[in-house]
Image (cartoon, rainbow, N blue to C red):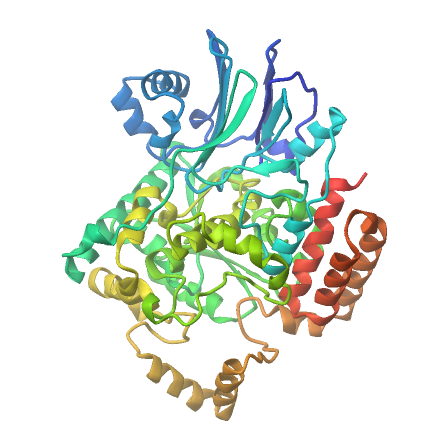
Length: 579
């Protein structure tokens, strides 16, 4: 993710981005440290690199509430805003920002450094600290290159590898080097008089008492009002820069409601929509119907050529190997084929199912076994003690899942997307997200309130099929199952029974039927096998014999997702420890 690099030492490195031609590279010369940026050339009036008196500041990303903050603090520039907010609010001045932002501030008068990420943490920040120095950057390769330039050690972090082999992402601040950490959403690094400490400025909570006496109709009004506000500020950010609107669109509810509310409630006339999936799958067919309804343009990228599965090293470079390298599937291939200079934010429905819905499928008090959040439990015993300790850090299990699977997992693809343009989801807007978490979980389970909101406020949106069930949201689960039996015959019953007993047959359907694609492609299987053997041979000295056996077992005996998990670990070794 293009952005910035800072240090309290003079470190001369090149900030290498995947698409440097789309970035602006600048630095400030100083005897007190290093201040560099190589930022995406978009939304530049929301960013800054400046030295004012005794304070040096860097801000990257975008602020959805910039106009409001300018009015409140009577300023006309980002530099003025940050300085005034810092002197007024102190070292957590950025807690009042909204959007995907990260940055740093150095106060020479007090010898204080502050390096921060946003509330979600999707504006990634990585850092390395020693007894007398630190350096931090928005791409992990910036920090890796700085460590090499300083001849500082990088030690393989085996626990991070096991997190990838189970969760398919990191649930804590780990990277594959023990010395390099990532700032979790809502935290910042404060370095004062040589002492470094990670502090928390925001955490999401659950306060069900907030809506204890509210009717469902009242809750729907609150949801609708706040979601409209979240959508409005996103699309207004495009208009501020005279960018055209760009939005992902699939057969799910999340991306649908993003563009629906933009059109129906915010007066947006036209949106360029994107969809990528298996050719002729429901996501494509439903997206075509919805875009036709609104007279929007739709670009479709079929994924059946599975070319994106060859992009191991490239995708790992972009994500730091901290989530599945195939996580964004063909989205990256689509984004790099578009003239992104025309468009503003990439509007998505990221994490909406879990935010306005829930990670739980039945009421919490009836849960016999809470969802683990893992993609694979084959080696879950390897990190069971670690997982238990991580869960205990959060005030509820659902909050833990939100940070781990939502922010650290799903939103980690933003590191890829932000090489093309900035990305936003109204479901991740801080105030809306907190409101949803405060709504009693039992009302959100199985999309209960989500569906009632759509039917009450946007009934035409319910006329289109929901990809998740293959039917409209007005139809019951029993009706959905009966339709499957009528359509597919006994196979629907067999699949239901097989799922109960833990067996999942290879299916040709689905947005990304990886198992089917891979079973049909000998060339890809050979490429993967060669990649595994060559990388294991090259880096086998770094890790234990047990980890090597586990990687081999997962790759040669696992399903497609588990194979990708093993490949992601090996690709990360090349990034962090390769020559």
